[in-house]
Amino acid sequence: DAKTTQPTSMDCAEGRAANLPCNHSTISGNEYVYWYRQIHSQGPQYIIHGLKNNETNEMASLIITEDRKSSTLILPHATLRDTAVYYCIVRVMDSNYQLIWGAGTKLIIKP
Amino acid sequence: NAGVTQTPKFRVLKTGQSMTLLCAQDMNHEYMYWYRQDPGMGLRLIHYSVGEGTTAKGEVPDGYNVSRLKKQNFLLGLESAAPSQTSVYFCASRGPKDGYTFGSGTRLTVV
Image (cartoon, rainbow over all chains, first blue to last red; front, side, top):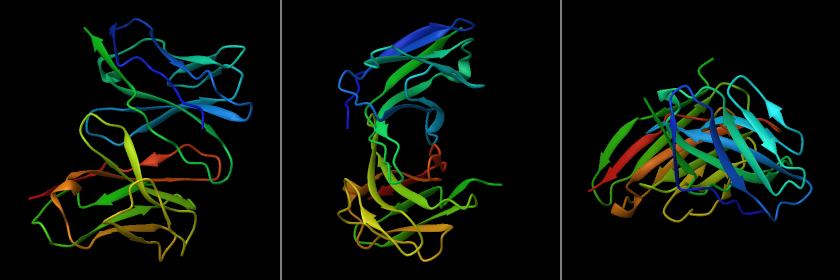
């Protein structure tokens, strides 16, 4: 599985867009990029995933570079409730896929 | 539709005692997982199941056993608890190409 590199921590002002980067330079053609987040003491929450096209849902946008070696998760209008650890995971989406969890990025939204 | 429910939410055990953690899902998912999470770390896979009656070892299976007698339930057992098993335990389930849905966790302390 391709490895991912994320910053350990980031700050963002409330109401601003939070942009969380992820490097996955060894990603292969059939590997998807997944994003999850974990709010303190809770179970992780699925945010979004994509293969090569940019994706958007009600929670966030995922921007994947053309060479697929990096991606950015965008929370368009961050709120205090978005303070969490964000995990970027790369994995093949076959029927038996499993996710390998790294340490993630601690995002702190400041008032 | 409750999603994934874990019981109990908290438990304190003495070294050598046994206990069973219950995970129940109502989404008709085939795949179920047990993870542990230690402070400041990502999730580590203990055991998983790809369907009723099946189980498989994950990254850190030693000291744990599991059973999947019914599709909706996945049980995690500790036969002889050790202080090293003090952790937060998360259960998750997913469909064939769905994101993971996690429970709210069980906080276990072994003294």
